[in-house]
Amino acid sequence: MEQQIYKGKLIQFYPLKIAKKAELTKNTFSLEFDIPENLKENFKFDAGQFVSVKFKSHGKEVINDYSMTSAPYEGKICLGIKVNSPDGATSQLFQNYSEGDELMISEPAGRFTIVSKPSEFRTIVAFAAGIGITPILSHFKNILHNEPRTRLFLFFGNKSSDDLIYRDQLDHLARTCGDRLQIFYFFSQEKTADQFFYGRLDEKKLNLIINQILHLDDTDEESTIWDAVDEVLICGKGEMIKTLANACYHHGIPKKNIHFELFEEYNDDIYPVEKEFPLIENIDVEFTMLGKKYTTQLPDNKDRILQQLLLQKFPVPYSCKSGICGSCECSLEEGEVELLENEYLTEKEEGQGHILACMSIVKSKKIKLNFDLS
Image (cartoon, rainbow, N blue to C red; front, side):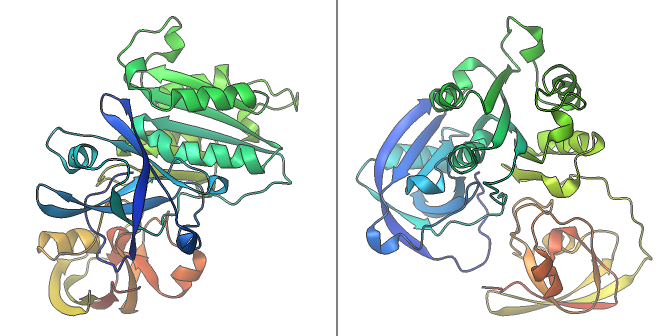
């Protein structure tokens, strides 16, 4: 995952030395970091999480988030990184830092995680596109290591075979755990011998996958593999996530069992919003951010809080605008809002009055927010 917008919350960084650096494809590379003994506790993480990396790009300080490909049991931090443009910050990271150099790395964060269940028989299906394979790789290594009864299916889309990263690692996992892991590669800009594997991962492709791959279940002759799916992991760009998440939901997977990680700013809702709200105009807003207090007035409640504050040029923290990343998490200290979708907050956090500004509609004449949660 790469996000170039600072979250606005206090993040603790530590200097870590680059142990290994490798070019994976023409526009992706990996970094591996040594973890000193005195920082082992700080860098404990769950599969699917990311770290923030602070570095210099064109003379300016940049903070980007990158998902880890390493699994917790490996005891190291490994990142898979995509270079989006020759002049971008990530390109500078690749060009200017080498093995032996130190970078400032944050403690692991993120909630693209699932609960480990070593004693259960589970079926987990994952969909990834391009660099979106990074947290999926972390998950799969961790599950194969810790859950002997879980079977995994990966559907991995790329433009071409030249763009396919981590194939060696994935194929090795498939060879050594072939009874529990099946991997299928799809290419959108390269013809394949079997037409089935040509094209993007979308709703139509999911229908084919369910009917032609996830159909007969050797463990239960009366149901299909898809019927047995316990969790779905999706990682890639916003439109792919939206399409596949809704398709999975319409094919019977509960929303709480569909987990996704976004790799870009995305302004659309993942699931359709079907609620309507009474119109409220001239809403007074007070909020605290990084110790500073702000006041403003929203013209009405036709749009979400975050989007309206951004239109007024307030530097509120955000990344995805879709209720996934949690960057705009804040505390509702006064007033009433409706949280449309929540893929981030726990029940405990909601009970403590936490909301996501990007997914909240105001339902009172005045609200008071606090973005300083740390």
